[in-house]
Figure (cartoon, rainbow, N blue to C red):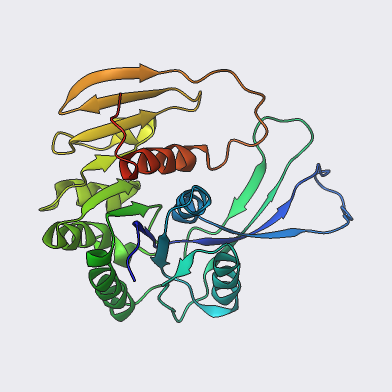
Length: 258
């Protein structure tokens, strides 16, 4: 079976969400809590699936939390190709504190992965990437031992003749930019763009900021600056992931960037 997109989310998240307000320093009794499968790549895969694309999602997901996350993903109609790890997938908590602009979040950084688990994910991607039109690597890596993983996967994508896009940060991003096959497209935020040493080998850059604006660079030349229409913001979490999914939707539909 072929797919439109392979999304690699190495460090997904099982998130406990309280959608209402809460009082800091007090016992808050609520009607119920929501459990969401999240992570940057999960968000990208979710939106592309809702737009009608055939999406397969892989990454690391172990333990009871990983099994729960995978059940939630499959329930949304997204093909599950996760690698089970010895360590459980990370968890988080999110709640809105009154009318403040950004919700309060508590997120575990990641979880341990072994060299064998990293090799298994790379093998899984190598088997899947010939069956897709586009590969998107999105989010952080769960463990410093996996920092070189994205650079290696991008090289595997190039070998298969499939375009690879990247939205990551930290050492995993630095190594991917310096690797033999940099991403065809990257979507850093302003801080990530300024902190990383060299973007010159990335053909298409989409630089976003917290205000919703984006600058688009093609071949190291600034082409456009985008300012979206004003909206009533509810929760900005995942908005950059939706931007990346929108780019992928246009690319898959053969729309010109203009």
